[in-house]
Image 1: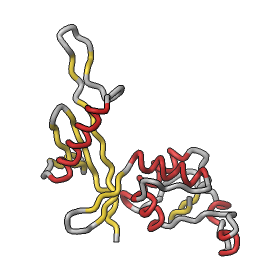
Image 2: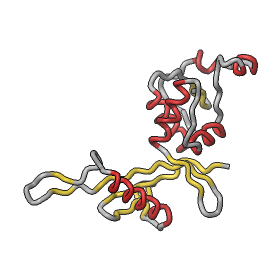
Image 3: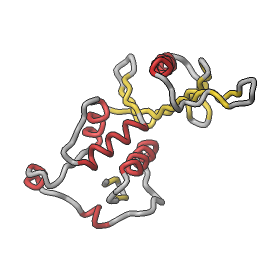
Length: 170
């Protein structure tokens, strides 16, 4: 990954996606550890890219990949990066046509039943409950929500849903 002031070869695509998500929030890599100059020096020619030696993705390519539910690459690390990024962020378009990359989390409110057993975790959620959560997130997208530490927060239907806009896209 090459970002302004930071380049790194990643073996762990989940970490690459997390670092990219952090970069989207403020566009700043100052103080990041792990810069590798050899990663910064990679500048493949058009011929090297065309022959499959490298796959280069800029911000627009990443946005396109996020929006494509069937995205796949011949490069496992590129596919893995996009898959991990999709697991952590969403690409949304507002009613006015503005596109955003958002970080959204939904946690079921943890409760205890009468015997004291903890119930209500999101693990083992069945399809019906998963669809219900998707509907709540859709409602959340349309609602005005409280802002807590930069996150929009809504408690609804037994869930705490948090959303933060990471980037506004051109």
